[in-house]
Image (cartoon, rainbow, N blue to C red; front, side, top):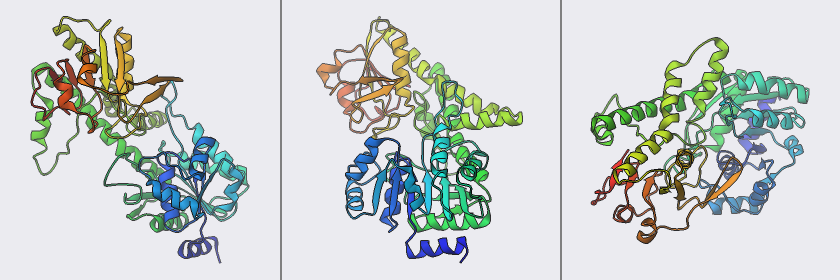
Length: 439
């Protein structure tokens, strides 16, 4: 049989061995889904702590069901390792590693590059390699392909298949998980696209949409998040204008979204957070410069969104001024450091940037988050207060709400008698809003 026929047969009889490189918010749920659908799976990660936790059946990702992980590990369907020599035992491996920005806001693809190098040393004939990490268009064919060919001595399309399938993980989403979110696949060659798409169809309960090449799939992912970045930038800019005009932007949005067509609601806030939306447009604008193209609309929205933490603190200072207090020396409590509600993920959280801006003014700032007891920023750990109450809140000069956690008693917060700056409109239904100002 040909390589394609052999792989199709393995998929159909579920003897295909699966691998996932990177056991974080994207990789671990994907590994669990593969194993749940009857494919023995190996997870690879450079962090021994994560590997040990997986092998002990201890879950650390909110979108993974604890019992599922424990059962899959105990019955031998899922295991983890830091030893990349086990790559030679898998027929399919997905690369799900971080793609952050460096200190100059340039793409840092070192994790992708290092993963590709590690995999290439043990890549065997008849293996499928798929990049899921969000990156700039061209990464799969310009970066991964030569690394894999050189390191393995194999030929892409003849000896192994290569593709890109962007992750679509939304931590904390109660409806859409890895398993039921439609998947996009782009690969090098028609045979690769067919077989890789078949793999995802066999492990996901959702549609798989195949595109003509990896670059289309890479650009598609950037489009998803740039679309949101631009629309959030628009509404953030309108929020600033509406404040000057004395208009409630939240009421404006509520009215606009009654239109059943042509409008999708986006909301303002203290900035952008998460592993995609604040970062992806930078990847595209960086790549665009290679073609002498200036992404003016994208960069304008990024400028607006990047300024929101500073604007948030400026507004907070005006609130304190009306109470005859200065930011310098005032005691401020930031409510929420997770980047979105009801999760413990604080990657790129705007709240952390808000805290930094408060500190620059000389304010004494602390935080409370029911999901995040402490966070690490620039190599330093910051610990939050353990609980809030009316008595504790009265110790502060201002409360700034930066995350819309549903487990916080906002009635109690608003009734404490302390000025409240609500950046998420979570106090919308609170009766007593005498001390509340909304972004």
